[in-house]
Image 1 (cartoon, rainbow, N blue to C red):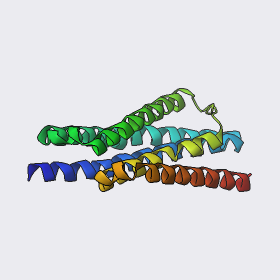
Image 2 (tube, helix red, strand yellow):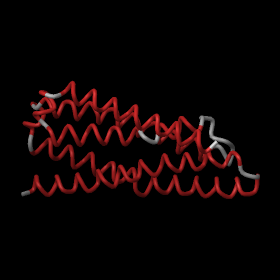
Image 3 (cartoon, rainbow, N blue to C red):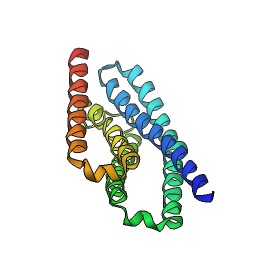
Length: 181
């Protein structure tokens, strides 16, 4: 029963964490979009985006990520057999990727805070593409957990499918940006 409760907490805070990460990078995109605005509008919006990003990071994303991680570690502690499962090793690998992405987001939060309303030194298209990384990681983790033993048997189909998905999403982002310009 305790394991099931912790698993439910883990899933709830995983959803909260990803909601925070998805919206955070979208705020970076909105901040970058202000480059083309007149100076007074640009300054007002950038201050608001900085405020929103810092609050989102500090009040939702980091606490949810912490609870997600602690509950995940508690599940490993309560069910050490997970560490013997090949699918779980794959999940851990994807979570390392998520940790790297989390670090990148944290650096961007610090960067826009310290820019004092100046432009974010990254191309808009790169931010829009970076916004999709969390989606890819979420797909990988969820499919790995749901398919478990099938992941090992069907790994190459999943990898090919994943790269097709990545390609389609990245091309869609590029097309949408071209139409905007």
